[in-house]
Amino acid sequence: MGSTGQQPLITLALNRSDHLPIRRLLFIGLFGCLFSFPVWADTPPLPSTVWQSVPDQAPAPRKPWVLRDRAIALNPQSLHTLQDAAARPHPPVAIELFDGTWYELDIISTISQIYDSDIIRVLLKNTPHGDFTFFINGSVMAATIHVGERLFTSEHVSNGHHRTLEMDPATVPLD
Image (cartoon, rainbow, N blue to C red; front, side, top):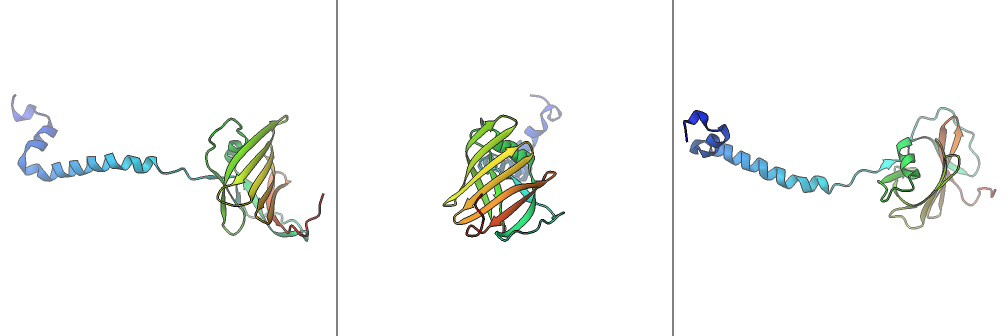
């Protein structure tokens, strides 16, 4: 077939007996690549968060029925995901209330109304008796969250600032 200089380099490396370690490394590399793809493909995406805690710039006076509260900043991308009524299945979305407990949301209905308003009903996955109702208008959100016997709300305070509150269901006044 011709001189050694005209043969491809890989053919020379694979056919010479003193390059056995190179063949083994090449085989191990190819074998590793083939079996690593299913591991990457089966990894579920991490849920995006609807909000995250932020430093409290203007603490509000605490009402007697509020057990605890904190300032939050909304994630516009997650709000858009919640508002997309046509998206099925929805990408994973989660919330964190207090004490570092995360709840993944199962969006069951989205109702779009006029003037950029949406009402979203959500169940909390892996939580018995957990539901969530959002009202979103542009970048303003209000929410009521039930987790068992506990009651939480998220509300717009002013100028795009929001708060999450844990309420005492026994003392909260009825509107």
